[in-house]
Length: 254
Ligand code: PGA
Image (cartoon, rainbow, N blue to C red; front, side, top):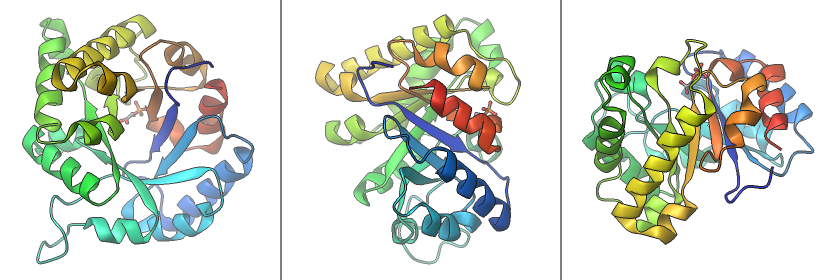
């Protein structure tokens, strides 16, 4: 695919896969994608599997991501993961503000912004997620909701930091439901997100930001979604849990 920005396909494994299962899955993905250099491919296992999977992906085209990050550094913060702990394991990306964390851990835009700043300060690339619920879409306030989340979650970042941030548009009603946004619905919101980025930091920055789509992406719909001009990759949940389906998505993006 001839795209303005390099595509980035990330597998969000959520709270799935033991360490042993993660090793098996990364081994398969690595084998099947060894020749793929056209797109950035990221796997995001649970924290408990990062150390072993990190050893496996050395000298492969795969990159490692984590699913959360503390807004602070080392210290008395029970249960938190500091950036240095991830850096040591060659983690490059961190998913932040996923709708499941916004919903179940009550993460706010302000907290996501602090975590994103902490990621950048420590050379980690945040994948910042935004997206409306079904009720919000039906109420006709999708753009309002997405704009609020964007402005709040990117608050305080420098233009350079925003430029290298990866955004993920994930309509909540499409996550894990098998209901994908149509490619036009997704493209419309992606174009809108880019418009918000222009108003925040100007054309040049907005043009460089990669915006992934997430929500029931699979091999059969990947090509059509990724063919849209403002869709620069995919954040994949369910279909990233098996090598075959994840590899198919990556291959269909080329
Ligand atoms: P899904 O999840 O692909 O299972 O819909 C996407 C996500 O939550 O990142």
